[in-house]
Image 1 (cartoon, helix red, strand yellow):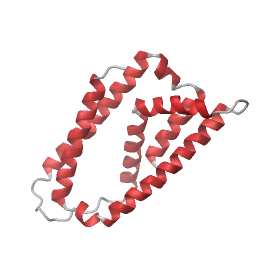
Image 2: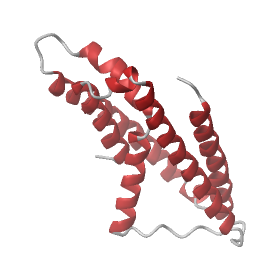
Image 3: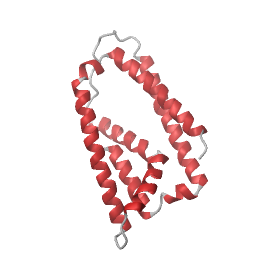
Image 4: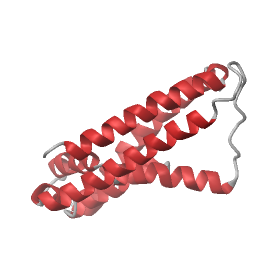
Length: 171
């Protein structure tokens, strides 16, 4: 299962067993998770900005080399996606708000919560397949170093902005 899917599944299980209800009841728990997510977003954004600035010497139309497909890079990518979803309190709040409404009386909250999270993951994977297929058609444009630098800088600024907003917002 994809890492964002694994993160959503973890939140779905947490909501099904009532653990994520702690985020609704405890201002401190919600704030700690929010700040951890904010720091993570800011770190991702700064990292993107830093690497895009270091690639400054690339020629404008050079096609970026593909990332190595070694085991370590897949593991790091999976952990990055998992961390992004686990540290997002809004995912937890979404599951807390939706899953309990769809658990019929007399059924196991854990099993039904897992089933609902799996259905949500399947829908998400279909969406990601659509996006990945579309990106495949645009691979030549997306792989150009100038486009990649600009996209990384815009994404980096947006992530830092989201992180700052998350850190500064009140419940």
